[in-house]
Amino acid sequence: MVSTEQKLQLLKSGKLSAVDNVKQFLSAIDKDDQKGKNINAFLELNKNILEEAKRVDEKIKKDKAGKLAGLVISVKSNINTLGMKATCASKVLDNYQSTYDAAVIEKIRAEDGLIIGMTNMDEFACGGSGETSAFGPTKNPASLERITGGSSSGAAASVAAGFCDLALGSDTGGSIRNPASHCGVVGIKPSYGLVSRYGLIDLSMSLDQIGPLSQDVFGSTLLLSVIAGKDDRDAISQQSKSIEYSKLDSGNKIIVGRLKIKDIDSKIQKLIDVRVEEASKKYGWKIKDIDLSFVDLAIQTYYLLVYVEFFSGTRRFDGRRYGGKIEEACGPEVLRRILGGSEITKAEYGGKYYDRALKAKQLIADAFAKAFKDVDCIVMPTVPKLPHNIGEKISVESMYAYDALTIPANLAGCCALSLPAGKIDGVPVGLQLMSDKFEEQTMLSIASMIEKLG
Image (cartoon, rainbow, N blue to C red; front, side, top):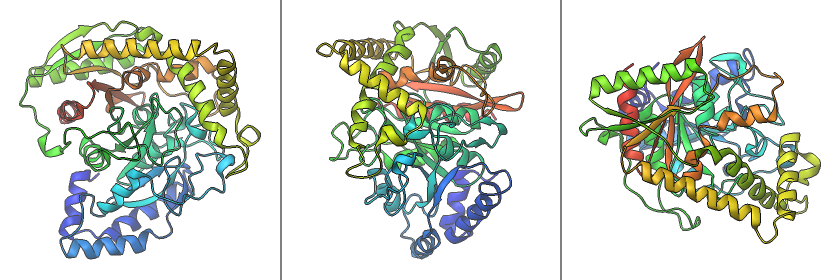
């Protein structure tokens, strides 16, 4: 497979036209997404993409094309994209067509990236398997009988199946990294505030971030460099250090914090340990086993915050302004979170429970900040177990446990990514890296070094 860097060079040199790049992907989608394997990654395709590609080719010929120069990008269906449906994979918004571009879409278009379509997801991002979509589950291209992981199921599958060069997802507690791990691709959860959320139909305002997925570290670094930055329409967004793949090198001494957590499949832990040891031997990294206080509170803290914030956010879906009334048209997982958030809100007693969750969130953030004073990154598996088969009955607790290792980064607000580490029984397994807030460049450098091990 051609790397993202090689593909970009082919496009910019004119050896591959943007039109031909698009046609190749449309052919693959027609063959394996709508027919054949029926992966079900896309909910809608961009009917104007070939015309858009022709315009990019003209810019390339004049040497005026942007950083993305004809690369093809899929978009999770909770990110507003002008003229296309942002359904959040729900019947509630089945007829909602975006009237504007989200900030990240504006930036992609400005750099001549081509939006190929809107991808499937867990309904309103409520889920960790890709199975709660109102339009059917997304199959894992690496193992068709298994889940992709969620909630950015279609985004990860579209990259893994070769339907696009890059993808955009959103991550509340692991929704980019979880499916990236299961599908064998790279996925980044940026630091909270690095990427504007303007135009995102969010699950949890205090946790959500939009981020990239790709087949390699270069692709995710490139897309992140495009979408990052201050946006006056999102009060929490801020300008940060530049992110450039050309700066990814191994010149610095690296100290890696290895975090061991119970209840992880021993085969997965062993695979991660082997990769870290390989990198340590080749690059001279120092490995330091660490403990993080309060991490055991992460799941309880996370779901209380998500339930309350999701309930509050869904009050706009009342059937009057747009879409249907959410309680009448949504699926069971969405309804569970709405009802749960409603009951917690009723029992608040002046913010008692939500306030305590925010305090626990701060304790976890402080623990990570302290750890990052001693290490450049923290490494662990992305998910604690292999993905289950589509339709397999598992408990709510078991489903929520998929995000046990990814949730802490969202609570801490730091950056994190999932990188392919190998396979177990033919199923991809992800290695997770976390670095301090706005230290994406450090994290990506370490990821690039691991990737180069092969």
